[in-house]
Image (cartoon, rainbow, N blue to C red; front, side, top):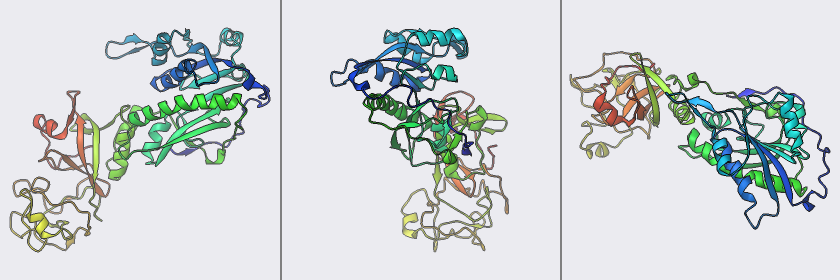
Length: 422
């Protein structure tokens, strides 16, 4: 999701097509709104409700809402209207649902409405130059990234996948290329540590609703100078596919956590176990690192990583293994000392009898496991090797189709240590 964009010249409409001086003397402006999914709805409602706010200086009248046609959805393939259509009808607005925007009759229809602005949010149709030239002032797009970062259709997921600290909304003047137009305003927001695709979607859609009013006000008052994008810095976030949700267990735990969160709710992160697809809903990296190959098992020749944990701390817990000199006692039933050691770390997890194999399920000596191997599922979490570390699965969904926390899942599904997610 970080493919550099081509450095093309912008085909934006002329900034002099309408004189901005004196626009603020007008009090009403005609808008054609274009959008389709849930993300578009807050902007539509903000524009429609703006006229009822006494503190607002201008009226933005929506003369037409254009959205995608109804589509079959769900197992029953029932025809369902897009969210924008539902919201527009509730607001008493006229709705138009063309299959494409290429017919001359559509161009004539929009031109006859004499709009001052197009406002376009996740519409799903490309607009030709002839269409973009219709508004008297600007065709404006609301994009879910801080451009020129993440042009394309999945900027929300890209920001989370890349573990960015901030994301945001950009309003821009549309041109014929994808998300390359001159920028008008931007608004940023920090990403939470547990940010998901859904939570960031909801956050940015609300920001977009506020920013479009600010943008229109600034344009009609001539308080804004469109700013060309730095095309050399542009990155691209292509449309997601279902396969983008498949987990590569060779990646580091933090990367897998970001992927799981980014792919929530769609397409969803998933893996396979014994040929069956399992959706992974929530994971947490475990702060333990080794210099052993990814997927290495805590084997009978391996020293446990407890050298930095005070013995008193370990003894204070009722469910941890006894410790002598910070090492497990040597016996035929426990892990003996060895020169094959893990690197010490102050952040190593305490060794629990529920986490590491005991004499009844100890792994074979010198076994190197592939990434994705289950190393413990005896407690209410499932621990899996990933990259050079470990993560724990907190929520998952099996064949039943119901999302469960790990302990509930384990009550009805047998997982054995040593099995491997693929």
